[in-house]
Image 1 (cartoon, helix red, strand yellow):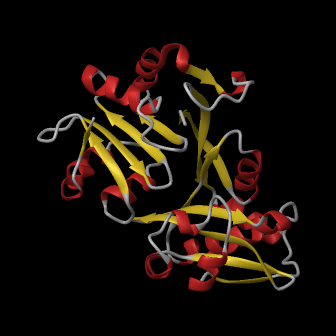
Image 2: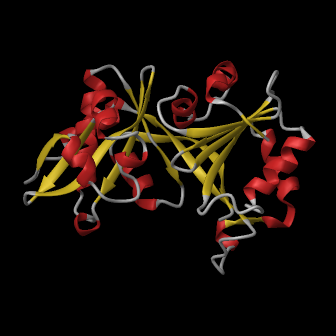
Amino acid sequence: MKLLEEKDYHKLTEPLKEVTINNLFARSVIEHCVKGKVYVDNYDNPKTFYIVHLYMMSLLFGHCHNREFNESFRQHALNLHKTRNDFEWMQAFPDNWDAVLKELFNDCLVKSSENTQQRETGIIELTTRINFKFNQAKYLEFKRNNIVKDFRIVQTDKQIFKEMKGSVVPFYFWNNAEDFCKNGIGYSLFFENKLASTAYSGFIHDNKLEIGIETIEAFRGRGLAQHTCAALIDYCIENHLEPVWACKLENGNSYKLAQKIGFEPCAEIPYYRLSK
């Protein structure tokens, strides 16, 4: 694995177009929207690519039978040199990578359901990521059947950007509040005059907007997220953007919410949690 300089990220533009699974986070890195790291097998004529987003999401794609690159990637995945302090969540494309990774990781690859001891180091945990497709007719039916409740929704501004706390908030997907307000969009719901939930664009490329959603713990379980997301989906429809949703299959709340507001599962993708 060779770390590519930012000035050469353009070398991944065409290869990334061949990736058909959701990859907006990877585009954000190579198009210099957010910081990340890009690795290749060869500086001059790269064939194997690895993109890591600042939020520790990553995409492995391209030629899968490069022995030198694969061994280097194995060391990275198992964090053998302790170069990171947290997990990394990785997708691979095309699916012939899965057989290669199974052999590469060997007995270090463990399904999430089998990780009963909750091991965090020395293993690669295999889960499933779901890509969804937006069904506008289904969404409009949801809107007709849901009466607005006692809350207030406003466009997310710099102050809300800074105040919104959680593990999936705009702070982790944009360089700063100014960048978000200039290049992104979000809506925040206030319940009893308190900030409760924010739905926002994690990434916007071409005509696609990927939705991120966070509800503050004290306000969860009240059905607020569906209305926050609806405000952002309305924005997408009005501005001819396709709303995009993806989540882990194991994230039951996100999986159910997506279907409630008009999204339908369209792809199941192996999702690798790389060792801490």
